[in-house]
Length: 104
Image (tube, rainbow, N blue to C red; front, side, top):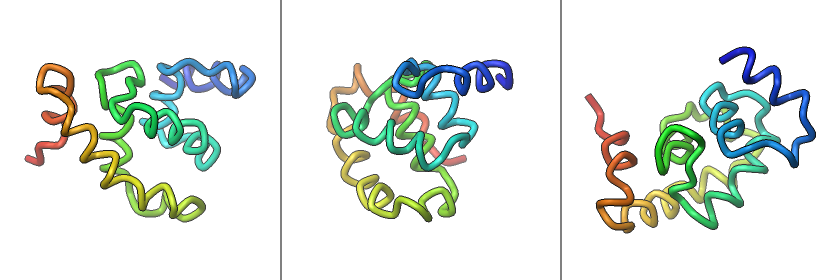
C-alpha cells in the first residue's frame, strides 16, 4: 500500500486513477487536495468506486474522523445527502455500500 501511495504522488494529480484516489482516501493521505478531487466524483455518482466496491470512497469518508473536514467543512455538510442518494440506488448496485455501513 505504501508503494502505491508513493507512486500516486509521483503522478500529475489530474492523472490519478479511481483506484489511486480510493487508496489515498483510505489512507487519508493528501487531504484536503484529495477531497477536492473526490467530491465532484461523489456528487456525480455517490457510489463512485475507488477500487474496492461501489461506494467505498463515500463509506470511508462517512467513517472518517472529524478533523479531516477542518479545511473543507462544506464537504462534510454534503455527506448526508450523498449517503441518501447512494442508499436510494437499487439493492443490486449498493449492496456492498449498505453492508459497509453496518456497525458491529
